[in-house]
Length: 177
Image 1 (cartoon, helix red, strand yellow):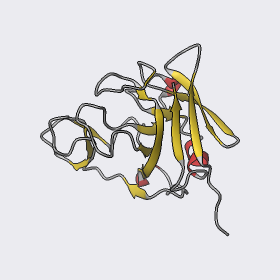
Image 2: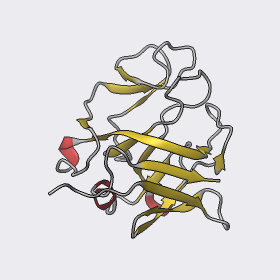
Image 3: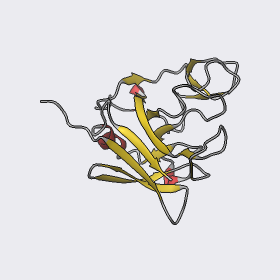
Image 4: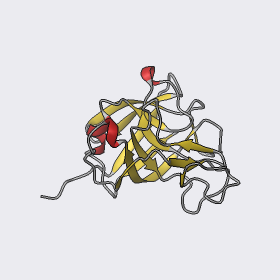
């Protein structure tokens, strides 16, 4: 039997705290953390904002040493200790997965804080990639207390697997300003 996935995951900013919101995936509604600057349609590298718009969910990554393989309709890849993500606008590999060590500015995907134990790659600034428009916009695990992200969307670790089960290759994420 073919699995039915939600068409759109919507993220709404809270009217009380622009750094928090709620994520809706069908009948699943979750609190979420947003960027420290809230949401912004004109996102730039380092501004701390989550980008407003509708985007593809390109793939999911997971730490195999921190839990079982998630069930999802997205392409799924294990995170390796040598995986990084370029966030340097001067790097020709800007806003892409890069092998570590990397001489330019980057994020480590293999993190000790568990935020990237499960990560969904939000297709922000991907076709074409524009240097300085922002990189590494992910849906990942939230910190305790849903403290703000650097521009990503973050949900509770206990709920990420329920969310992933609802997401397929045609699912879009819409971040509402």
